[in-house]
Length: 455
Image 1 (cartoon, rainbow, N blue to C red):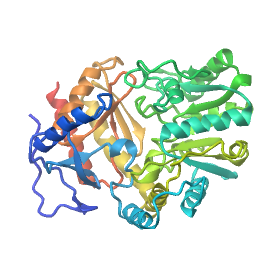
Image 2 (image 1 turned 90 degrees about the horizontal axis):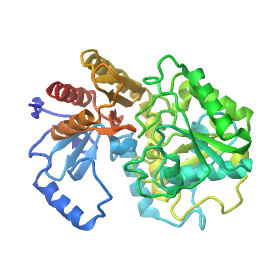
Image 3 (image 1 turned 135 degrees about the vertical axis):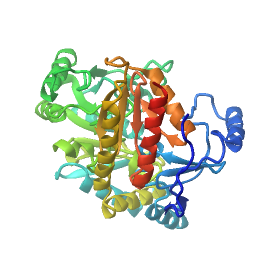
């Protein structure tokens, strides 16, 4: 039986107006959430699923409060979006100021300074000190598509290489680029052509294969099955997201980037989930000093508002004809205001180092759990992007059933956790960097109790 009570605390901390405590005042889901779920079933397309059957009413720091008054520990950040915390004060103020000024003009019709300022910030922050240009969009998938467009125009070539376990989005092109069939691709074909898949470095499953050797394997695959003379871009997540938080072995990314540079292939880093302090660096590529030709960002950039970007070498970005990049809502003024405030918060509040602190805290506890539980095949990830891969004891065989059971039990105990992985056997943790240590400890205590109860 999981303990769902809250330790006595006379004055819990408050972040963005939300008390930083776990508290269950009803069963989950409570009556108001159940009523709303009935309305959802009657009004929302069945293809739009939810991880938890509770409806949010307020959120801040490391807590989501549902419509029944339950306080849930947030270890998901809306899938790595609210990195600076939900309703972060600078973001709230910036959006309020902007909405009072104007909400939309379309940058392609009458431009505004906020868009330019976000582009300048991204040109400064993304890896490399070369001249850069940025274009803004709405979603990660949209930005990935535009990165491919830029690469194809710049190189005059068509083919795109992605990797095993990759996730790049839900549009037709990005579904082709995504590896996992269910629920992302099943029934939605035919998909865009000229997309090819190469083997990734997956240390937990690669045995003694190190990063450079894994890169050589991938490069041989690309050269023999695609050919550099046909290849516009190699697109890779520096740490995979939906694929299972797979962290390539050291040397893999630098070797790929060097091969691309030597073969007139655009190296595209999909930093949608890994960007903006999430991994303990501003961008995950910074960890090994990899400088991509194009960087794709979204999620954490906007402090909760929809915004994405492609930032890259000026000579590549400027090959596209005027009007070839854009969109009605791309770089919406509210999202730009939020992004500038989120970036200010990351830099002013030391959130890169905070992500490293979260990693130390979480990995210390998770490694201790793994030492006593053979079902934990691997603890991996960096910064506040940590995962546990669950397997049948003593093997590398994925245990999706256990993963689903553990996640569901954590949800019932008031902890928001997410699952991922091609085989559905990975628990992923993406806490907001505003979360207090006490909530992280409590969330991990609950995870330990859940794992113990499933033995």
